Image 1 (cartoon, rainbow, N blue to C red):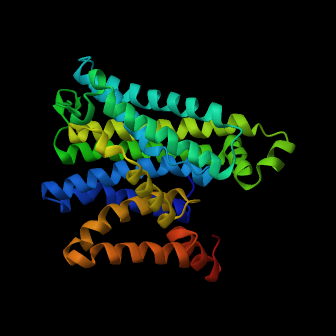
Image 2 (image 1 turned 90 degrees about the vertical axis):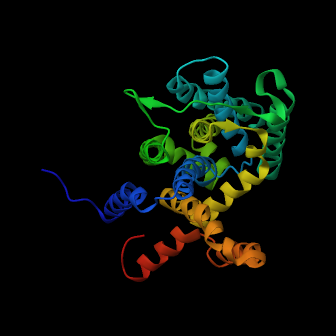
Image 3 (image 1 turned 45 degrees about the horizontal axis):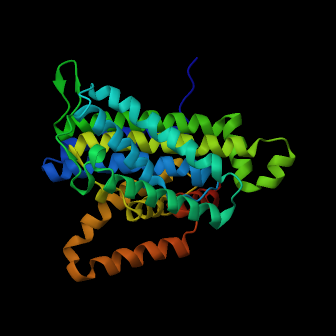
Length: 317
């Protein structure tokens, strides 16, 4: 006997139905590029949710993992002439290994010392992209990145590419939610809430932190492959610390402890700058003021505010 969907499951289904039909309302090519970027930003923000939201590790190396994924797929398909789908496999694998490589030597660091270490990793990665010209082509970047095809059908049109990204986002969201509900996920949350207490209870905090770094980097690597084959061009300018700050803002605005909030924050902050751009000189002031107001008055983000409303109405958060 099949059970009726719960309220959260029903909300997810409504959101997915809306995501499936929205390309029909966005005819302009630029609108469809924004749709694709919203999906890529959502995967990146979910990746940050695994690290910061579930495990409590504040990292600013996310753009570096994104870059490793993008460049891995670009180099393999342009210079190595390998199939595009192999790039989609190799990109998250390379980024996941980089995440583990960053996590292992920094396990003993706490709080802001770990954050500073991730800043160093991000900057080293950017410098490698700029200076390793025989492989990365330096500041000029790599162009001519091919689009994927499926059964002979090219996915180059933005609308078709959006559905590829949406399918990957759904898979990522389902996998992360299953991780959160698993024993490993509960261990990650225990590390986030009190690492010393978790270790005293026999939870292998060090191994779980390496796992969180690796999974988070893997997901950003996947987003990097999506980005490279969408734009058909990559350069170091696309993977700066500014982009990591944008991902952090998306997660904080949506709600850093909520998977749905992470996705909603990514979509909102992908579109909000475009909606405000007509205000010209006032654009950055209103955008920055709005972000500041949400962070000050809604510390749990939009998801936290929604949970409080449900509690006041006598419904479970």
